Image (cartoon, rainbow, N blue to C red; front, side):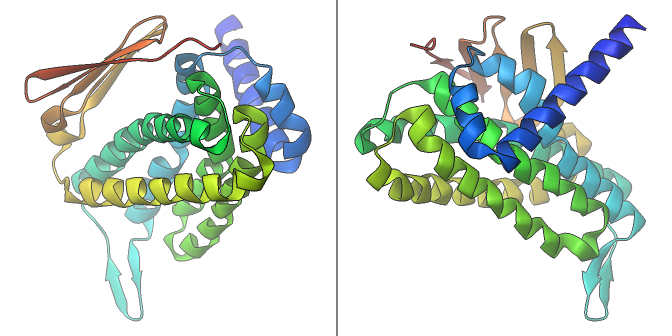
Amino acid sequence: MSSQQDLQNHAQGIIARVKAVATDPAGTWPVIAGDTDQPMQVFTRFVMPLLAIGPIASFIGGQLFGYGGFGFSYRPSFMSALGVAITSYVLSLLAVWVLAFIANTLSPRFGGKDDYPRAFRLVAYSMSFAWVVGIVGLIPALGFVGLVGLYSLYLFYKGAPIMMGIEADKSVVYTVIVVIAAILANLIIGVIASSITGPSAAGSFDASGDEMSIDMGDFGQIEVTEDGTTAKITVDGEEITVKVPEER
């Protein structure tokens, strides 16, 4: 019963944070700026469950209704749809880290801070609204409603000065550049995810406590240490180590 209550409280906390950011960004971003959660904590407790909404909804919607229009319809096979859903989820998780890296790297050039944990929280919490809107994937015909998720771009814009210290007159340009990076990342994700047809390439997860590993099959493997400050990415036998600095 205790674990069930903890899960319920955690879910309510996620919902409350998404609602607060979406409805009162001006009042919520200063609160988030005062948080001390490190990237790995935000990633496992907030990003992973919310980002799963879109792929799961699209998988179910595609199986129930299929896709199409103007007299054309298409319903993917179960295994193909499952492979695409898992792969898009994994790659979208990676995109969050990449976008946070880009946001942090660009920040000093616009008068802001070099602070990766803050950049990660900025990306994670601003994008949360779009991830929730991904639920419309349950009904593919209503996919256009997903455009509402663009509101997350406004949330990022409002959060950038508070989270990263971006100069007010440069916040718009900073946001546009990061958004362009996000669009490119999502295009790449879509192309790669759609090219995957076998579950073996889709990968698997292993999350125990504060440690996590993602096996992406042919695309490599990622391992994150328990303190969330070091990630090891292995592709084609070559290992790349990425260190995330602690919040200043």
